[in-house]
Image (cartoon, rainbow, N blue to C red):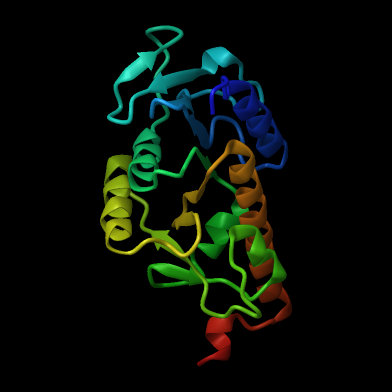
Length: 214
Protein backbone atom coordinates (compact mmCIF):
# COMPACT_ATOMS: atom_id res chain seq x y z
CA UNK A 1 0.00 0.00 0.00
CA UNK A 2 1.85 3.05 -1.28
CA UNK A 3 -0.91 5.63 -0.86
CA UNK A 4 -2.35 7.18 2.27
CA UNK A 5 -4.89 4.65 3.63
CA UNK A 6 -6.66 7.12 5.91
CA UNK A 7 -9.45 8.09 3.48
CA UNK A 8 -10.25 4.39 3.03
CA UNK A 9 -10.27 3.86 6.80
CA UNK A 10 -12.50 6.90 7.28
CA UNK A 11 -15.03 5.56 4.76
CA UNK A 12 -14.96 2.10 6.39
CA UNK A 13 -15.43 3.57 9.87
CA UNK A 14 -18.41 5.63 8.70
CA UNK A 15 -19.94 2.52 7.10
CA UNK A 16 -19.50 0.45 10.26
CA UNK A 17 -20.75 3.34 12.43
CA UNK A 18 -24.01 3.48 10.50
CA UNK A 19 -24.37 -0.30 10.81
CA UNK A 20 -24.14 0.09 14.59
CA UNK A 21 -20.80 -1.73 14.86
CA UNK A 22 -18.74 1.31 15.91
CA UNK A 23 -21.13 3.28 18.10
CA UNK A 24 -19.69 6.51 19.47
CA UNK A 25 -15.96 6.09 19.97
CA UNK A 26 -15.97 2.26 20.04
CA UNK A 27 -13.70 0.19 17.82
CA UNK A 28 -10.52 0.92 15.91
CA UNK A 29 -9.12 0.48 12.40
CA UNK A 30 -5.57 0.38 11.12
CA UNK A 31 -3.66 -0.13 7.87
CA UNK A 32 0.00 -0.93 7.33
CA UNK A 33 2.45 1.02 5.18
CA UNK A 34 5.28 -0.45 3.06
CA UNK A 35 7.88 0.40 5.71
CA UNK A 36 6.03 -1.69 8.32
CA UNK A 37 4.53 1.28 10.18
CA UNK A 38 0.76 1.59 10.41
CA UNK A 39 -1.92 4.24 10.62
CA UNK A 40 -4.46 3.71 13.42
CA UNK A 41 -7.48 5.59 14.69
CA UNK A 42 -6.87 7.86 17.64
CA UNK A 43 -8.40 7.18 21.04
CA UNK A 44 -11.75 8.73 21.92
CA UNK A 45 -12.83 9.78 18.42
CA UNK A 46 -16.35 9.35 17.08
CA UNK A 47 -16.07 6.80 14.28
CA UNK A 48 -18.89 8.33 12.28
CA UNK A 49 -17.10 11.68 11.94
CA UNK A 50 -13.40 10.96 11.44
CA UNK A 51 -10.92 13.15 9.57
CA UNK A 52 -7.29 12.53 8.64
CA UNK A 53 -6.32 14.32 11.86
CA UNK A 54 -7.93 11.50 13.85
CA UNK A 55 -5.12 9.05 13.08
CA UNK A 56 -1.55 8.44 14.19
CA UNK A 57 1.23 6.59 12.38
CA UNK A 58 3.11 4.17 14.60
CA UNK A 59 6.11 1.90 14.24
CA UNK A 60 5.49 -1.78 14.93
CA UNK A 61 7.04 -1.30 18.39
CA UNK A 62 4.46 1.41 19.19
CA UNK A 63 6.72 4.43 18.69
CA UNK A 64 4.74 7.42 17.40
CA UNK A 65 6.02 8.51 13.98
CA UNK A 66 3.32 10.98 12.96
CA UNK A 67 0.92 12.73 15.31
CA UNK A 68 -1.42 15.63 14.46
CA UNK A 69 -1.13 17.04 17.99
CA UNK A 70 0.35 16.14 21.36
CA UNK A 71 -3.18 15.52 22.68
CA UNK A 72 -3.85 12.85 20.05
CA UNK A 73 -3.31 9.40 21.53
CA UNK A 74 -3.35 5.99 19.85
CA UNK A 75 -6.32 3.71 20.35
CA UNK A 76 -6.36 1.94 23.70
CA UNK A 77 -6.35 -1.32 21.71
CA UNK A 78 -3.25 -0.54 19.67
CA UNK A 79 -1.40 -3.49 21.20
CA UNK A 80 -3.85 -5.90 19.50
CA UNK A 81 -3.01 -4.39 16.11
CA UNK A 82 0.70 -4.63 16.91
CA UNK A 83 0.23 -8.30 17.77
CA UNK A 84 -1.55 -9.05 14.50
CA UNK A 85 1.03 -7.24 12.37
CA UNK A 86 3.89 -8.93 14.22
CA UNK A 87 2.35 -12.39 13.84
CA UNK A 88 1.15 -12.18 10.24
CA UNK A 89 3.47 -10.54 7.67
CA UNK A 90 0.71 -10.62 5.04
CA UNK A 91 -1.68 -8.59 7.19
CA UNK A 92 -2.04 -5.10 5.74
CA UNK A 93 -5.18 -4.00 7.59
CA UNK A 94 -6.71 -4.82 10.97
CA UNK A 95 -10.28 -3.91 11.94
CA UNK A 96 -11.89 -4.22 15.38
CA UNK A 97 -15.58 -3.48 16.03
CA UNK A 98 -18.02 -3.84 18.92
CA UNK A 99 -21.25 -5.28 17.53
CA UNK A 100 -24.11 -6.67 19.60
CA UNK A 101 -24.02 -10.01 17.76
CA UNK A 102 -20.28 -10.46 18.27
CA UNK A 103 -20.73 -10.02 22.00
CA UNK A 104 -23.68 -12.41 22.09
CA UNK A 105 -22.00 -15.25 20.20
CA UNK A 106 -18.86 -14.89 22.31
CA UNK A 107 -20.91 -16.58 25.05
CA UNK A 108 -22.04 -19.49 22.87
CA UNK A 109 -18.83 -21.39 23.62
CA UNK A 110 -17.33 -22.01 27.04
CA UNK A 111 -13.97 -22.93 25.53
CA UNK A 112 -11.40 -20.97 23.56
CA UNK A 113 -13.09 -21.27 20.15
CA UNK A 114 -16.55 -20.81 18.61
CA UNK A 115 -17.55 -23.53 16.16
CA UNK A 116 -19.07 -21.89 13.08
CA UNK A 117 -22.07 -23.24 11.13
CA UNK A 118 -21.32 -24.82 7.71
CA UNK A 119 -22.60 -21.86 5.73
CA UNK A 120 -21.73 -21.03 2.13
CA UNK A 121 -20.60 -17.62 3.45
CA UNK A 122 -17.55 -19.26 5.02
CA UNK A 123 -15.98 -19.00 1.56
CA UNK A 124 -15.79 -15.28 2.27
CA UNK A 125 -13.37 -16.11 5.08
CA UNK A 126 -11.26 -18.33 2.84
CA UNK A 127 -12.84 -21.68 3.78
CA UNK A 128 -13.29 -23.63 0.54
CA UNK A 129 -14.75 -26.91 1.74
CA UNK A 130 -18.05 -28.65 1.10
CA UNK A 131 -20.25 -28.43 4.21
CA UNK A 132 -17.38 -27.57 6.59
CA UNK A 133 -18.20 -28.63 10.15
CA UNK A 134 -14.94 -28.04 11.99
CA UNK A 135 -14.21 -24.36 11.33
CA UNK A 136 -13.83 -22.49 14.60
CA UNK A 137 -13.16 -18.85 15.44
CA UNK A 138 -10.67 -18.33 18.29
CA UNK A 139 -12.16 -16.77 21.43
CA UNK A 140 -10.11 -14.83 23.99
CA UNK A 141 -10.93 -13.60 27.47
CA UNK A 142 -11.46 -9.89 27.94
CA UNK A 143 -9.10 -8.00 30.25
CA UNK A 144 -9.10 -4.39 31.38
CA UNK A 145 -5.41 -4.22 30.49
CA UNK A 146 -5.53 -4.63 26.69
CA UNK A 147 -1.82 -5.55 26.38
CA UNK A 148 -2.72 -8.69 28.34
CA UNK A 149 -5.21 -9.62 25.61
CA UNK A 150 -2.55 -8.94 22.96
CA UNK A 151 -0.06 -11.10 24.85
CA UNK A 152 -2.51 -14.01 24.96
CA UNK A 153 -3.17 -13.63 21.23
CA UNK A 154 0.55 -13.81 20.56
CA UNK A 155 1.03 -16.80 22.83
CA UNK A 156 -1.73 -18.83 21.19
CA UNK A 157 -1.09 -17.93 17.56
CA UNK A 158 2.67 -18.48 17.78
CA UNK A 159 1.84 -22.07 18.68
CA UNK A 160 -0.90 -22.60 16.09
CA UNK A 161 -2.12 -20.24 13.38
CA UNK A 162 -5.89 -19.63 13.39
CA UNK A 163 -7.97 -21.28 10.65
CA UNK A 164 -9.45 -17.92 9.63
CA UNK A 165 -8.31 -14.30 9.89
CA UNK A 166 -10.67 -13.41 12.71
CA UNK A 167 -10.94 -13.66 16.48
CA UNK A 168 -13.46 -12.87 19.18
CA UNK A 169 -12.84 -11.25 22.54
CA UNK A 170 -15.58 -12.24 24.98
CA UNK A 171 -17.89 -9.30 25.84
CA UNK A 172 -15.71 -7.06 23.71
CA UNK A 173 -15.90 -7.54 19.95
CA UNK A 174 -14.46 -9.11 16.82
CA UNK A 175 -11.11 -8.42 15.16
CA UNK A 176 -10.27 -9.31 11.55
CA UNK A 177 -7.18 -8.82 9.42
CA UNK A 178 -6.50 -9.10 5.70
CA UNK A 179 -4.02 -8.31 2.93
CA UNK A 180 -5.85 -5.03 2.18
CA UNK A 181 -8.36 -2.66 3.81
CA UNK A 182 -10.97 -3.81 1.30
CA UNK A 183 -10.30 -7.41 2.26
CA UNK A 184 -10.68 -6.57 5.95
CA UNK A 185 -14.05 -4.96 5.22
CA UNK A 186 -15.19 -8.10 3.41
CA UNK A 187 -14.01 -10.36 6.26
CA UNK A 188 -15.77 -8.22 8.82
CA UNK A 189 -19.05 -8.17 6.91
CA UNK A 190 -18.93 -11.96 6.44
CA UNK A 191 -18.10 -12.55 10.11
CA UNK A 192 -20.96 -10.33 11.21
CA UNK A 193 -23.36 -12.11 8.83
CA UNK A 194 -22.36 -15.44 10.41
CA UNK A 195 -22.86 -14.01 13.91
CA UNK A 196 -26.35 -12.81 12.99
CA UNK A 197 -27.14 -16.25 11.59
CA UNK A 198 -25.97 -17.96 14.79
CA UNK A 199 -28.10 -15.66 16.96
CA UNK A 200 -31.15 -16.10 14.70
CA UNK A 201 -30.67 -19.89 14.54
CA UNK A 202 -30.77 -20.10 18.32
CA UNK A 203 -34.03 -18.16 18.38
CA UNK A 204 -35.74 -20.64 16.04
CA UNK A 205 -34.14 -23.73 17.56
CA UNK A 206 -31.66 -24.69 14.81
CA UNK A 207 -28.88 -26.77 16.33
CA UNK A 208 -25.28 -25.64 16.03
CA UNK A 209 -22.67 -28.03 14.54
CA UNK A 210 -21.38 -28.62 18.07
CA UNK A 211 -24.84 -29.54 19.38
CA UNK A 212 -25.42 -31.89 16.46
CA UNK A 213 -22.33 -33.94 17.34
CA UNK A 214 -23.25 -34.41 20.99
